[in-house]
Image (cartoon, rainbow, N blue to C red; front, top):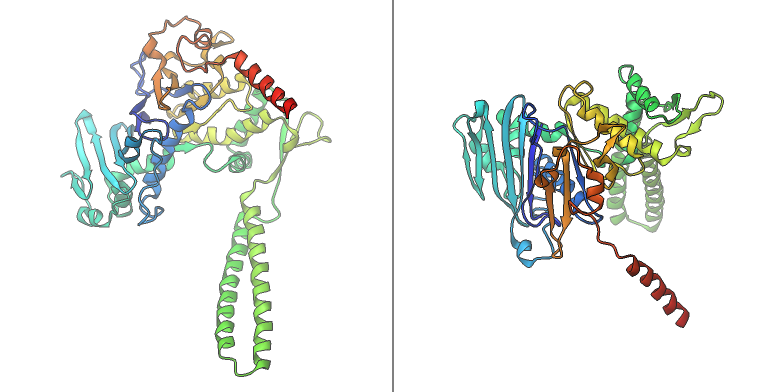
Length: 462
């Protein structure tokens, strides 16, 4: 469970910003189940989520995935020369199996500058790791090959990543939260999200939940039909493995033919070898095409059809509205996150979704009965109607609402609604749109009209 996330010097987030998920009013809960970030276009909403995504990527891939000599692929604030040479910082507070952990690091373009990991069993701080450049200090309670981990950790990789691969078991809870407990809806694209929902439809335990949610959304859908792939994933994988093996063998034959061609004793032998080489290269191209086609079949979701009452008139996925498509794509990830007690991160959750559908997705996380494991939903949105009640029921609590605003210097500031000490019954939607909380664009209608008229007059003169 995420208690807080802090970031500094990442894209438009120049100064340290904190997304705080501890409840402001209900102290019985360790963290709020939902955090919604509102703001104008280009204010920096997506940059908050991108910073959390960068931190996850660094934890999972810095050791094996980053170029050993390529520095750190960070994105510092560009509009201030001092920020380009300053460090970027990322830190989380987590509650995992009843134990609080604090983990974070700072980086510049070249290397990791600082890294720390603390555990708080029974509320008392226990140092697991403190790092400054190439100096490592491991806590006395940490067991495992600590000196080996310190030697194996490159300047531009995280010790947490190296430690897990070297079996430092006390690093695992935090690492596993980034690996399994933090999920991004946009990580693999819409086709991947759709495939996850379809896989749930094929599961006897989850198909009923998916259908119940689709019916509850009042989309008129009575059934979903899945057109199964002619070959199973295992069969497709076996065929791809066979093609890769043939590719390697064919590549070896090409190399051998090139060697023979370089020492061919006469013109007739060279002609024969050139003909053989053309044949081998043609086969290599054909194998590459076949392998690409199989990869695409393996990756793309099965074809699905929706029934709206009449079984003789199925609708293809592409014939449904964008809202129906967006909801279907998101349902699988939502149920997976709730089942795992994970944090699901969604950028622009209201894209193509009606306000009522977005509110119902939020409600799944806010309701302890549908979310018994404490999953969390963190999202950005422009939909101001979520700030008000729906059918007389609050969509978002006061401490679940955040705003972000960009200053004239291009730096974004993140702040909670609770800073304004709002009354429980005030009309938050109207006050937000009226500018009481900031984070709204300042638009001049005359400027828009003048821009169009000026462009038209310039065209007429031309």
